[in-house]
Length: 37
Image (cartoon, rainbow, N blue to C red):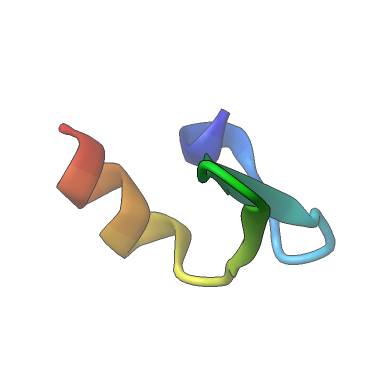
C-alpha cells in the first residue's frame, strides 16, 4: 500500500494501546517503506 500511495493519498497507521488507540499520519512514504522492509 505504501509503495503505491501518491501525494494526494491519506495513509494512517493505528497503534492500539490498553486504554486508547493512537493514530498517526504517514507523510513520508519512502521512509515508511524502508522501515517496514
